[in-house]
Image (tube, rainbow, N blue to C red; front, side, top):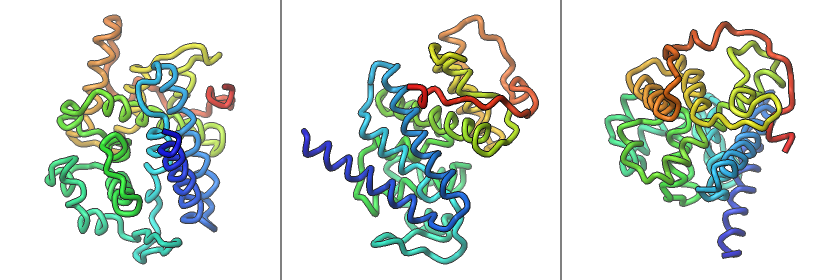
Length: 266
């Protein structure tokens, strides 16, 4: 078992270093590195609060892999060590679409509003790290927008992995916008999920808010179906919920007080 853990830890460290090398010289390097490590910290914390239903090493790999191709490097490919980082993500996804057909129908790959960087990352870790584990591929693929008709057919453990990463991704980016980038945002998601003192845990509500935050970027039927799914899950667990499902419930964008993240307190 320790050999398996060592292998997984090696992949995590390699992915962390690769993320940094890809963004060498970029003004966004620090923000990106803080984002992916904060996603990992949030995911670890949420998994623990849920009773550790999923593998923490796999969560770590997903956290460090999910945005590995997010920035646009222009049209030219970038050579980083033995890895080739694609410049044109859309072309990269289209050329390697066969690596995704075991996970989502080909029609979705070419036509739906799944993020190119999410599909690209799912392809990249298969090609560059020989990772075929659906418990890793699906959370990377669906971290910004889960295709619910596919999600519903997945093993519950994979669904939980996806949920944890969706929430952790938005917790991290929202916290960084408030505390590092000094941007106006609609809510303090960390406070909604964990409360002011970090002693609450509003998991399903957090997933709904995470989807509402993301929905403005993906205004299509797949995004709407995803948001509705989490909203109905919330209503099933809390019959008092009667909120209207749109971004307006989050209010206008504003500057929120800066505060330590819940995971930094831990």
